[in-house]
Image (cartoon, rainbow over all chains, first blue to last red; front, side, top):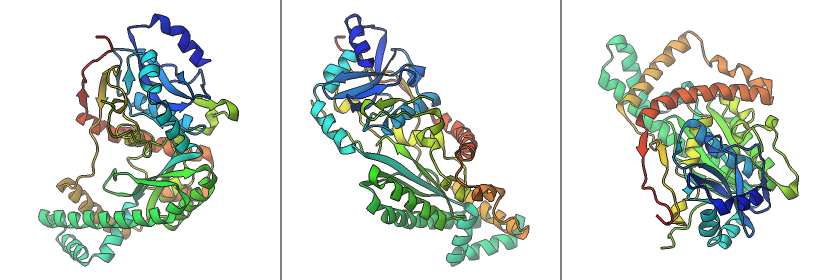
Length: 263
Length: 153
């Protein structure tokens, strides 16, 4: 339905609108007419052969980047990913028209996109993100690191008069100790879950108290085991880390562009 | 919230009640009780700003530059401020243990199971904190105005 509408519109292309591209899906995907994308715009599909692009027509002078636009972009892709393979595009991908999307993006790279989609058939992304519980991790560091413990005692003895340099030194020791724990704990999680996933992509730590931030591509057949494994880790680390499992997501961390542009 | 795309041959629907991916966390969310600056928007930023396919890798002519407010990549940087924060937190540690405060009240709900409504409540709270946290970051916003290119122009 949506693609038929796109066809009908194309002869009289609106010069004042441009075509925002969310991602690429198999052609047998239908968009829900209630779905909303960036700028609260309706979402349509542009079809070409066996693939289709999820797009929105938006005014050419739209300024994007507000929180709701970012959320709309990801929400749409994640909802799609829950149902079907999807190749997500980076936020802010815009082409001049639906024609251009079909003729210059979908048609020339049809086979490439189709084969990439088949890689993601039955596989979805999950992100395991964990942050240390501050009190627990600080106690851990003080117990394990003699120098930190010594500094901490000295600062405590000095009370209000504590030397600024001691404070900075203690903080640096803790920062580095936590970084080492992050590395070790990330390895633990990766090793525990790797057998249940197709692929792993570490993400950069987001906060200084991040424990783990790893994206996993998981086959639907293994999702239950995967979730159970994550749950087990969370239970083992109760009161030590706050662990969240995000997903299923579109494969942001696994869908990568061809390295060399056509020209 | 509406389903974005349903595969016709699978006859599936994504209802409002099922929630978005961000909301689909389980009791895991509550086990640590850390909360803080992580949740909806921060996760979105991690996923869609510098990941996924890049249009420029495929198309050159008909890409349109639109005004994009972008957020500088957030990298964990060691700074004196961070060090002082850790040092001060360590000092507070002693106070709280003397008072026997132990784990904060956040843990209270852990045993109450996996009820989705509950989890969403927690997440919503986290989400608000995130937007507060991000508010500061927005001062680092950069305005990028890529060249406007259209086919035939």
